[in-house]
Figure 1 (tube, rainbow, N blue to C red):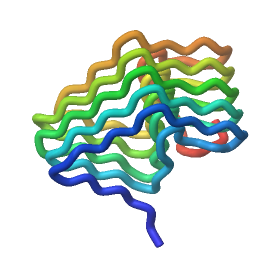
Figure 2: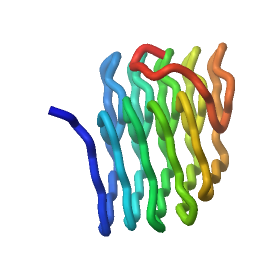
Figure 3: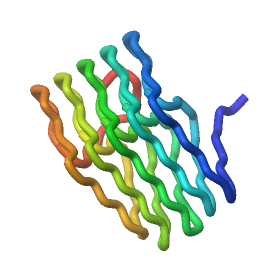
Figure 4: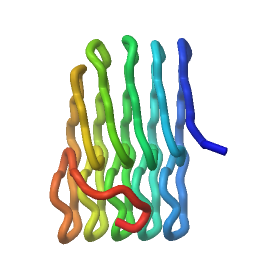
Amino acid sequence: SSHVGVVRGGVLEVLGCETVGDRAPGGGAWLEGLEVHQSRVSIENCVTQGSGSPGGALFVSMSMLFSSESTVAVDQTGTLGDGSPGGGLAGGVLTIVSGVQVSLVNTTTSGDHSHGGGISTCLATVDGSLAVYNSATAGRGSPGGAVGLGPVGAGG
């Protein structure tokens, strides 16, 4: 059974979620795949606290597809533990098609070996708009204050 989230012609809001233990990715949600079509996604105030817990807002292990005039807004999310890349979004292949707006604001990674304060992805194709503001990495061995490219996995 595949855990793929599909949002089509609607609104998805994830507000004030967290994971506390180690190897607990995705403060807002943990999915194998995510597709957003003609929709608005808003994720705010989400965090992962343990080590090996990427994706303060979302962890999507396979692929993220944002298409068809969608807007995606991530605000005030982060990861606190070591080996936890992607303060906002973390996962596999990221695709943003033309006409789509994705913005990440105030996203951070605090632990060591936690690249990508805004987004951590293994491959990104951006034809739409991707804006990352006020994102940072604070720990040692954590390049990419806005965007980090690295392997998929909940181990950092």
